[in-house]
Length: 251
Image (cartoon, rainbow, N blue to C red; front, side, top):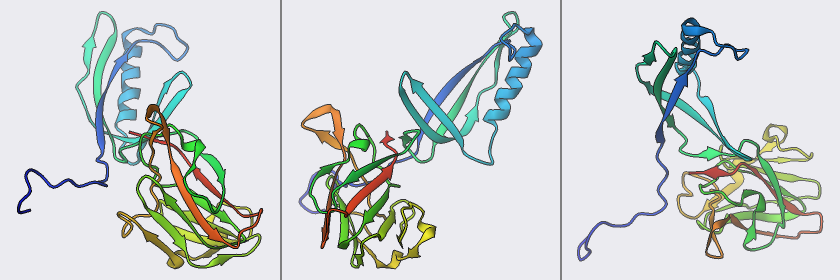
């Protein structure tokens, strides 16, 4: 660009897949906890290499430190040759793991309940996330006219130009970019009428993505990260509400 030094800054880029190494130590312990000698160590090594050799599906990797639990779908991209210690009947090997989706997630999803027409609401169940949540399920409960929801951090919005009667619900699957209108208390889009074509999106990247719930630092405290959303609708009553069902995401 004429008259500008350096690179042109680009924001809103998607995350790249992450890769890291895992080191395994294989011992001679039997399933009952006894010492099975060198032969049992070989059997244990075969069981591990069979697990690491899975190629027909993604593997679920689980990390736990006390009450902190994170899970990610991973694939094994490479493994080292086993380093065998014959005398001690142990083996060491390293596996290179890739997280295609880039993010770690909570093990269990949570549901948040909010107001259908309010700015900058904190989604308390998603507090503490460090990465964007791209696959949230959003549910508006009527009555509501032109319900919409936006992410404060990114400025992205999802809007429905129609209305909801009392007892009707609008389901928005942000990950699959699908929407449906249902008349029962369900989160299943297949149980209702598809209205994906009636959904509009605005904001950065809205031409190829729906709502990305993005955490930001809260009150300048790095240990307090909040996801803020704004909602808008008219003709609402005390029965009207918005809900978000999702798992937190971590870099």
